[in-house]
Image (cartoon, rainbow, N blue to C red; front, side, top):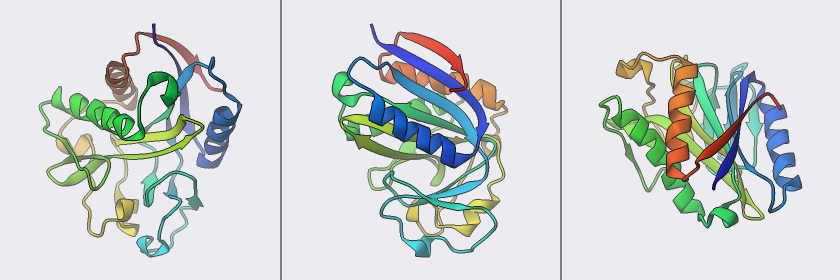
Length: 212
């Protein structure tokens, strides 16, 4: 039996959540249940460990936080669904590439249910619809355990993406469920994405929690 604790965190500032992910990963042991944290963030740009400053095109009042995931700069804001995946990959016998593919496939399956064809790209992790990015991925693995995760654009202000090269790609178009004609709430999208992630990781029992 595969167990999962699911935390619904609402809308959160970025920095405290990142610090809690780090602390959770440092303190867990081989008996700690895996968790998914579902939330939105207040507006923030996050810059990965190898991020190049030239990919931030315009300085705005939105803060830039340098963090410990892979990848370049991206934007998080209200109306974007975040799924942070705090998984023991050793216990699941998952490699990093296998985990990335599973998360991408979860989003692709979700969009397929809405008759939207989406694809992943080996050269640029994430999910794309007709060349426009709808979901971004960034992970950190420490002692065989993952944190950070997946962001899915649902119904948000996409304007801040114009102030960066999203994920380090110049002139990369960004889209969202709303722009594809998919009318859904963030709550409904949370449930659909959770189901798809559970399917990908063969999770058959969840415990729901609100807050930390």
